[in-house]
Length: 333
Image 1 (cartoon, helix red, strand yellow):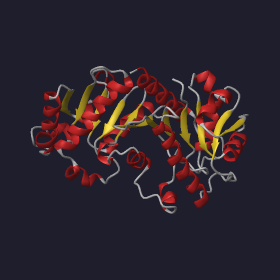
Image 2 (spheres, rainbow, N blue to C red):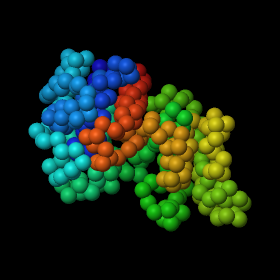
Image 3 (cartoon, rainbow, N blue to C red):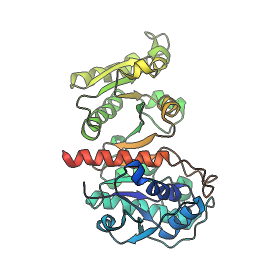
Image 4 (cartoon, rainbow, N blue to C red):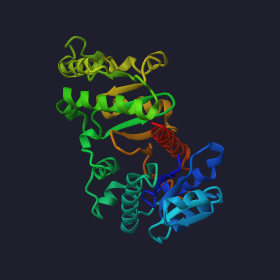
């Protein structure tokens, strides 16, 4: 793999800049592939200094310059000369975050970078500068010509991979949003991505029920029999090794997890609670169904931690490592 990974800086007042710098400082020890930050060289330099680490910065104009400087400095594609104000988000920082996301996405789409790792943003701040998407996932999907319905969020860690069918919606809305086609489509996208990017030739997909005990023959709701089970049957008819609906409360212990490669869950917390309980510091947010690879650390801007040196670098390292591994598999395909 010759093209480096691209990291969008995220909100410069958050923990993204210092964690990118900290990941570079550990890149040799962690065996990370070359990467560069799209954002602000000044912000990255100051963030590293505030964290108490020595990180030389090399300003680049194009990704093909990364190979020449990565060993000795963190390459930064400099878009703006902003002051570093940790914990104090403003419109100028939001504009940088948006411009960095757009530029990094374009570089990956063009092939100049091999994968996209997105730093954390503050969506409310971005909305003030013209960002009209629910999140970065939808922005990247649209830039790639993929509908939001076909951009699937997976949380992946060493112990577990989970896909929530519905994501950031109120729990009371979930039953009305679930459809057999939605479950079938997002599970099929997951199976294809696991085969292509994770080297799992025939992924085993455990499909959770919506209700306690997967409905218990209709005593606790009809959705599992009427909506979830038909989706599983359609997937199996298409040659996908999906099974369920399963009682959600017995899906995540050690023995159960050994029987599948990813868990398909019906709503956000059903997926993310076990994921974060098992792999809190190593969880990676991956967008499946895109023509490019996109990962992100599974945390937010953490404005209260920015500049304190207390933010953990593990999720950023995990996101970089996973992006590099997936890109290498695609390069060999």
